Length: 280
Image (cartoon, rainbow, N blue to C red; front, side, top):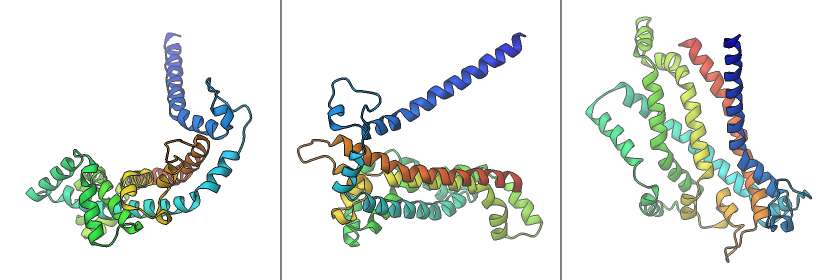
């Protein structure tokens, strides 16, 4: 009797801790939703309310009428998708080469990747801006994509390097014994096992580019090419007064694309894990 009770108590404690953690993670989003549905008078109360007393959609209408949210979201989507794909295309072969072909140059490259994460990224803004100006890429989405790839690539390379190292060399050697060449073994043996790492890298690159504000503020000057983070910043007036209701509504809408992307890519991550387990 004591053991079943102990197991039930342990499971109940685990579920309780998981529920508390889920509430902790969901609280900012729920508070954002509550704020977006409140009237300006209710938001000005000294004692804030948890739930809106008179829910309204006026903040959503004001957000769309005051700023070009759809245009900013579309430009951010293009930049984030391009950054994610280009980052994986560059990082995957580099990670494989660094993991499989060990040399002094590879060790220096790995060390440089680690060192590059130590310095604040604000230090490279001026050099990047000068390079983009020489290439006539300032105030363009192409220039911002290149900056985001430069920003995300070191960590993405480090992520994929760990996944490549986790793939045993014996699998490639066994494929070579069966007559498979280097390309065939990479495509048929190694690639399915790297699918979870590729999906995780895509997700990290997309979210990093989608939420990035500082580089976009420096590179993009024309409002017609502003991304979504820059569009959200416009809800703060020149006097520093924040229009909290429309900003909350716009910020809530800005989370939808990244949540949809995560929901779609999460299935790919699971299927990649299963495919890797079966083919490995």
